[in-house]
Image (tube, rainbow, N blue to C red; front, top):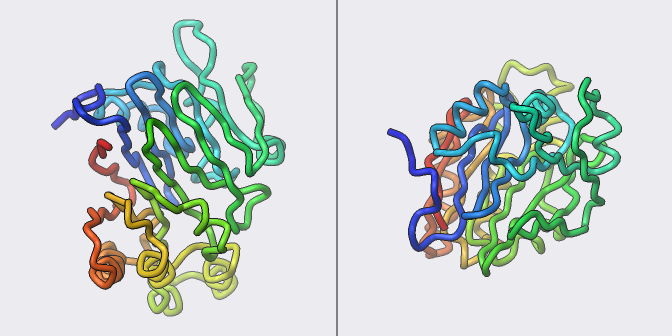
Length: 271
């Protein structure tokens, strides 16, 4: 089934998690007039195919935002940003520190640098940026604001500092990491050094930490929460879903809960 390319009548924001796992990360977020991609960890061909499935295209993108330099987030950044038919490339929004770590393309890219904590405006979307605790040079989380709506995207973080809890207030939509089940990670195949990294304060959020955030801090305004960046070796979608569902039930709030499956895009969310 192919989704409609236009914003559904009566809605303002269109969001689709194209991929969210260690194999590749990319999220589409757009309005009727502005189309953005967060990260480009899929091949150009796969990115184009997944965008086409929701009625979008690389050629129509107004910007690509980069969260950090790890390969699963930027492996195809420059090939995805390069438009065809001699059109200027898609502008890439990235911090100066992160840009300094990236291998530069043969063509001249369109790069807009920003500092964590500043607001970036692209079309009719205002993007709030903030630092996340992850083992990258300058990792960033994002909140997107337009016409009174707020969507938060935050994965690849080792814990939930108060600063991020602050930024995620009053969200209507939230993509939140739920990377691993702690017991599966402990007995899983990773070397102990890697396990320590994942569990560390600059690693990834466990199901328990994600559900604790939902239980204590998830905004009552949130209509949809998507659990993302699940480990294929150290988690199971139903474990992540169960932990989050129990936390939501404990809050007594009505929230649509979706688990982003590794290597598979989600449904399209219309806000």
